[in-house]
Image 1 (cartoon, one colour):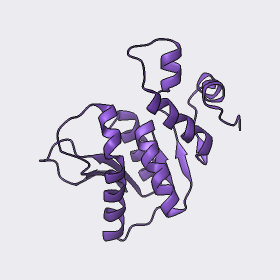
Image 2 (cartoon, helix red, strand yellow; image 1 turned 180 degrees about the vertical axis):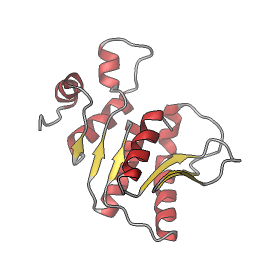
Image 3 (cartoon, helix red, strand yellow; image 1 turned 90 degrees about the horizontal axis):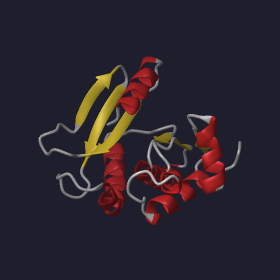
Image 4 (cartoon, one colour; image 1 turned 120 degrees about the vertical axis):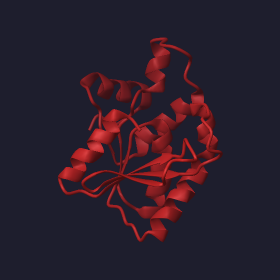
Length: 163
């Protein structure tokens, strides 16, 4: 879990919102549920094996992760008012769940694969990532762009609405 997501969740919890942040199990010794602060929890769910795997390999486990999240939600009598995603992989899961739950899906991209490819930073991002980000940028209820440049990149590279 990134520092940004942890602190955002904690701040929302302090303001009275109930926040559950879901992540894939990385260590089988981890507890399933951790309290992160007032009204805020981190919940580990199984998706594939418990070993560290490359980010792109996680993609094949996303349907399992979404189903495990839905099973956890149902077995604990939980209901959510919205979904917030913060990366293309979690965005895919968020869109999947949004279709089941009929709640708004809000996304904030951590980075944009098409932009990284355009400016040649590091390894080339796979087309799967760019295609998934494009679909999310065009279909999520709301996108949070941290800067005007990110907003412009979303419009130019992904066809997002300027609104």
